[in-house]
Image (tube, rainbow, N blue to C red; front, side, top):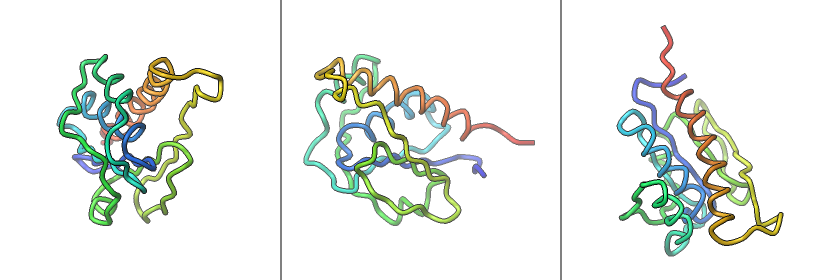
Length: 140
């Protein structure tokens, strides 16, 4: 079930990297079609600078974003909750689409730095595009 104006919450543990990547990519793709939130189960002090840089490479500006905690208010107001990675632990909310995206982890293959971040970003981007199509599909 999707509402006329769907809302999605992207969650990771620190809300400094993967969930911010997903939120930035969805905002860029959906513009005003989807309301986008991001949060962390244990928010960090600041965003991951490589995550920010990898979005900047695509022309996506996340200036003003910062790690935020998961709140019941946001959890209860969205159509979908997407948990990125396996570190963040979150209970599904009844009646809300709930998915865990086990994202690519290039460091397991010895890939680090910006190359690692670009691979993670691109993996998340593909998933965000698919989610966007699902959330905005109109049913007659």
